[in-house]
Amino acid sequence: MNELTVPVITIDGPSGAGKGTVAQMLARELSWNILDSGALYRTLAYFMKEHQISLAEFEVRADEIKDNFKVSFDPGIPGEPVKVIFNDEDITASVRTEEMAKLTSTLAAEPVIRDFIKPCQRDFMIPPGLIADGRDMGTVIFSDAKYKIFLTASAEERAKRRQSQLKRQGLEVNMRSLLQELEERDRKDTEREHSPLVPAEDSVVIDTSNLNPEGVVKKIKTYL
Ligand code: C5P
Image (tube, rainbow, N blue to C red):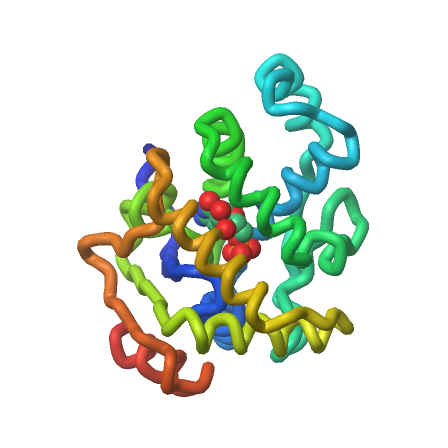
């Protein structure tokens, strides 16, 4: 792996732990670049679905997929999710659904998908710095980063947050099924063989269950 040329702060953790909001706040405050790696996986899942590309044919079509896979992020407005721009089109609403999350989690367990995404992620490392949000940012992709955060929170609290987030997007979801889906996705992400969701040994773990985003950012700044 190339050595880091720009500072990177990694923020890992399960869905709903507050990674997105905190990454967005830090990126805006520091004027650093942002990598929402979950959204990168979601975009690839969306692209494969749209173009009916199966996992079996992924490898042979990898070059063609790479040529068409131009993703960027806009930290957007606080309180709203980071915007996902794919080939100049804002696809945020299409990729940030629970259906897409489920499909993404299945695809993300596949080494061929992870190998494809890996260099795309390192490309986001541009000056003056990068905030990288995901599941394996501190353990695998930016294992050489100096600052590593792992956010966690109770499943109930995370499901509640997810529900309000989806509500703001105009989507009504049942709390019970949301909690079930979230736990199932956590299980898949944590137990998978490749790049499982675990805190990096040298990360600072913050439980955000009883903290608001400002409180979490304050703790991170103390650590930095
Ligand atoms: O963070 P988000 O909910 O958008 O991530 C969607 C899914 O993408 C996760 O459940 C996980 O399976 C996958 N993912 C991953 N590695 C990352 C980021 C996301 O496997 N670094």
